Length: 252
Image (tube, rainbow, N blue to C red; front, top):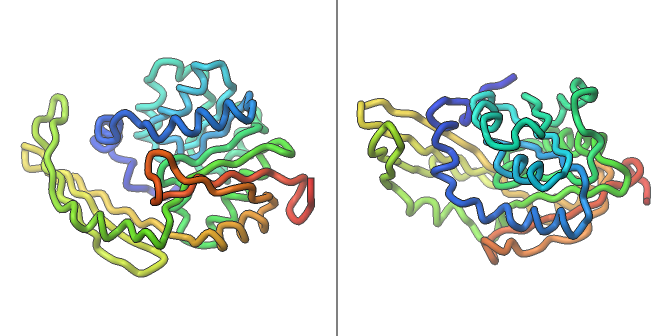
């Protein structure tokens, strides 16, 4: 399994503090309620904030995450014992079928998850793995930034900031957009700790146009339903909702 930028003890331990209250997750809670979901597959679950929130509300939850350090944080949260955790990617779910609540009737990819699959092969592979682990008629919900909004231009102005890490002290965060090679944008965010340690983190996101998203969903066996304006980032992100067809290339 490939190492990713989140598989670091400091990044995992401070992730929730850096991300804040996670109001972006409210939309997923509302959608799950509106769809009458009883079971959820959380792909790229990170530190498990959404997974444990759903489990606390009585839903059956399976959460998959490739970064082991993030999973350790997630599994120490209240209600974590109610979640079936999988260390891996969506493609690994079949190996853990006996230990999960799958198939689910709702799958989600919150935050940046849908934008980390940088090739069509990886993206389609993930969508097909989700298809295999959803009930017929089940739904997939994810968010993705609107390419025309050119979010990376705003990011480039966020050069440096400081924040307080419990037990560590003042952390100086240095941010830089290092490459814009559309549809991919690479950026780094280095955490400079008081003792002189530098914790680097480099990420690349892909900005797919809506037409391509619709096409790949269809190829993977989903019916595109809508792309809503993200309530926490109006005009900047879509919240995509799709429905699993019986099998790729079929209706119903």
